[in-house]
Image 1: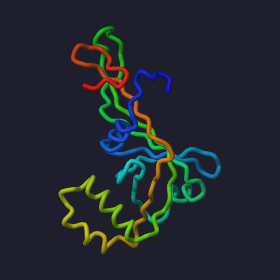
Image 2: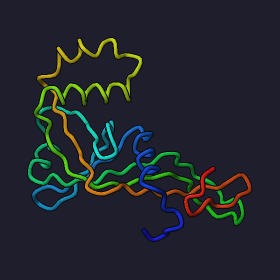
Image 3: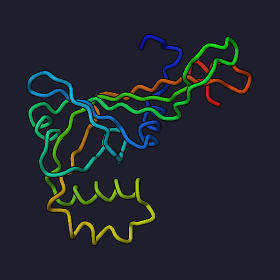
Length: 171
């Protein structure tokens, strides 16, 4: 990381990944071309994320040939004017993580992953979860992403006095 003074802990980075409304998952196809797609991920522990999709498509074809992925998320992104010097800048919280993707084949794990995704994005509708599973489990794919190294977080943020908060200083 070029500006080490903005680097945050792995735990902090996981929180950014958890709070982002979507996480961009990047991969490389068989021709060496990049492919990135924003997805709704849910995390079950420090190293495991899940997403769901159709049972066929470009991302699944790519992941079958090359399971390496990069996750990227940004939250609290706000254009601003530097409080002390008047520079045009951006306050942000971001995270990057690397991992490998694998299709979930166990029905039990698949249902638990979908439950985790639903609890993250539609917690007030869990009463309809079982009916939805009965209706669409067979036509839904679930992919598990296992991190291969700790995620890295980065932040640019100013405190109430207009000083940039560096070296993992918290609010």
